[in-house]
Length: 99
Picture (tube, one colour):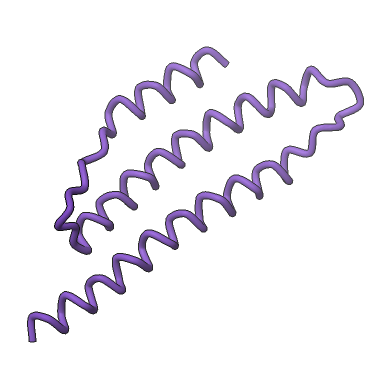
């Protein structure tokens, strides 16, 4: 479990988010989505390790790892989808203004 924690911290340290300024454009949003995608991937590995260790130590196997994994996947997919959709809408608006 300690190794999973070290790997999470290293992954986060190597993936610093770029700031978004007032004149945000679609590429800024796509960059933020890319950043979050990497954060979610690293966090998913860490959570899987923590949940597996916890499930192993709970008598009777009452921790539903698949359910928790599904919740995390849904949350991360929804968050990325919202940002990527906003980037697409912004890109369409940018293209309209440019023409």
